[in-house]
Length: 251
Image (cartoon, rainbow, N blue to C red):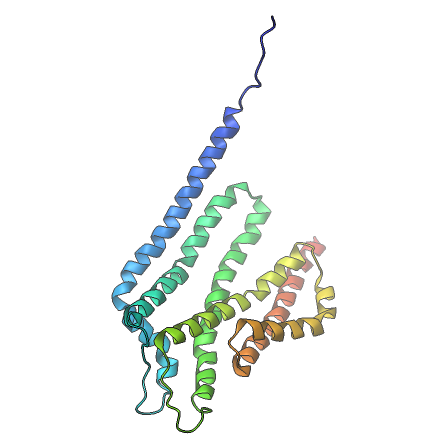
């Protein structure tokens, strides 16, 4: 009788896969720990952080009115939730560094050269979008809301509802400010060209206002204040893509 031979097991591939999984677990653990460490450092100042975030509304409230908590645990849970979200935002550079450290060994040199500035630009633009929402959009939006109410109605906003409102705007503006990166990548990767995007400008502008309507609360001011930067950032992305394409074509 002839002996049956089983195919040899590729221990090299299995070992490489296990090493990648172990490294992935380590990167995820470091990311979670970074958020936890920042949270522990910030938790003592949770109420102060909420006071800072709510300042754009509180300073516009009519005299004699305040923000209120309509749920028993809101005075504790609302600043707690804000601190968790803020910890994640602040840890984002470190988290992206962990992602970069995991994927960079498999990238070519020219890909790394392009990815590093895109990574830093993405972080900067997201923070810029959040800052734009806080310093530009909030004063205008809350100034409008606090002056158009019916006569005899006291403005006393619930602290949890307010936090949900501002976090939604923070996220919407942070993501919207990534448009130059998305436009740049579409052109550089060859999916489209800058000239083709220019011809579609009217549709892009309409799309910006539609996204502004979907991503922001139902008021015209915040929708316009999101749509206009999105359009301008789209134009910036086209300019950057053209600048990057010129040296490549010249070479």
